[in-house]
Image (cartoon, rainbow, N blue to C red; front, side, top):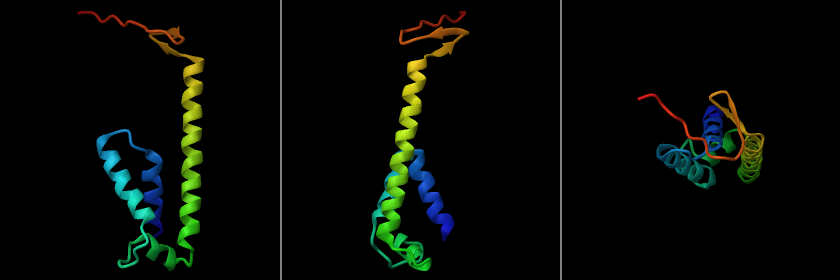
Length: 102
């Protein structure tokens, strides 16, 4: 049961970078926010199995995800600020035209 919760957190961490990921993300997010407890793999049922309060666990997961996404955003912005290398040349905030042999 803990593996299901861990998989849900990893799915939400991955984000929505493709159409398939967006669909899985939406399903996982609905599962996490649901208060249903009518089947054994429902979020509330898993929390009950471990004697956890679902609202507290939800809050902690959402806070963790927010921090994770903020950290990823900072890392991405830092990479842009530093520039990157294309073909061995340092590139800083400008368009680079790549030429390929025909």
